[in-house]
Length: 190
View 1 (spheres, one colour):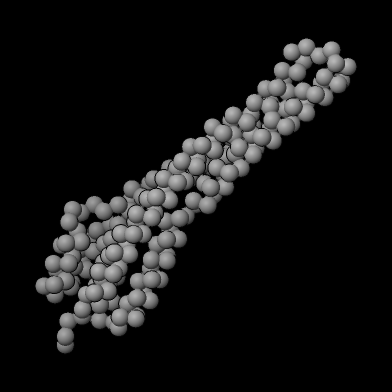
View 2 (tube, rainbow, N blue to C red; view 1 turned 90 degrees about the vertical axis):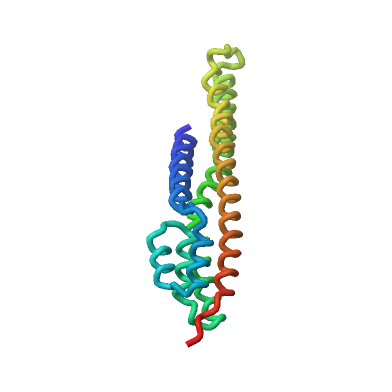
């Protein structure tokens, strides 16, 4: 039971940390992209950069990078933005593999408890030469019911794992659109 309890505490910790991360990463300024696009069209780059730097979140950061690198060649811009998106993906997926592992091993730990509980119950029956009562084998049967505890940990853990996967896919889709838009910006002619 202790490994299942440890798994549940680890899963809760990861889920709370990811909620906090996504809360901090959300877009907080209404119409932020439209405001930046307008500033870029008016060639007010310093104002746009300041707005990006003072606004927290993924989108402002990408747009800020795009404004900083607007004078570079298209290939250099693609390379820099791809590197950033790769780093972003790594940050988005942080600890999710552990959540998947916990969701997969928790039922197995419960199953292990079932097997050891049944072994204990049958050993007690054998020890008492077949005349064991319910109270004699109750401990083994109770241990066998640990499977339920493993499932109670695994089901919500896998739910949150998939919830975060969907959230990451939405963010990445939005990020790809923003990167494509940034790559269409043209540097002002000297």
